[in-house]
Image 1 (cartoon, one colour):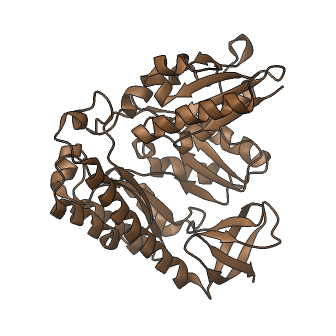
Image 2: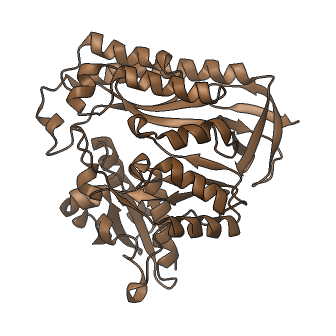
Image 3: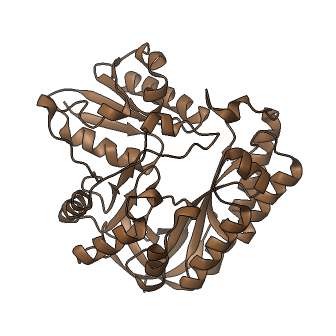
Length: 388
């Protein structure tokens, strides 16, 4: 008997899945599928995960939760093996006996790297997105709860904490101030990493931390979405192309070794070839070395779904071109690290990351081990290192 979790989508989902499993009954057989609805492909993968879980464990009861379950519950309720479909508001206590109190911040149990939720929901209305419907308005967790959750994760052996949420730069009082307080309150916190950031919301306190605090890991993943001003306007984003470039310049001026990741959408409705090329050029202009590329997928009942759509093959082609360019930039970045010495945290069997979030294979390394390693080789996916 056990509670198994299958998690799709964002890091917030991973943090929440751990809480569901931790509060769930030990004497019942459940599979929890924590779904994502950010794209049509994510919803399709959720359905596949449910089918696989039912084939693999036909006697287990399946709980479907998360954003896809919130937005489109009926199709999941009809699937074989599904016992319950629960929306985001009740997901954490869905399997808890006696309406147990829910931890307001949750990490991944017994992991070297733990995700801790600081916020959920979103107050913005990007035209392509339905997550604000699934998650509700922005709500920040109290500092004391976040601090205590981090302390619990460190007690369990976590070496790195990743702050996560739907829109963490919208944290009440400022994300930078929160990070300053956490680093001051918990001296055992040696590695603090941030999940996806909205570039227009990065506050002065966070920029100050980037410049002065070595415990803040120097990789910053930005929700950029596009590199063309007209497309950004039609997406109802709150930054311009120039704003994005300036944000990256400011980050790199504060910490020269900082690396940049980005979310980008290819083939948004009305996108012309010139507009698509502006997004392609943004990879260079923002020095992106870790890109998440999404072919545009119309979400039901969103403004973007009602805009003139591009041919699906054109969308796929533009996404493939963007991915190829991003992969080339990433490969050059990894190649440039060969011969250098980098701080490494080993997170799994012979696998880890540098502070700049480059994946590393390190033979004979023990989980949780950290230190300086010499980079001796690379391929398109990762570095190979030996302890220095």
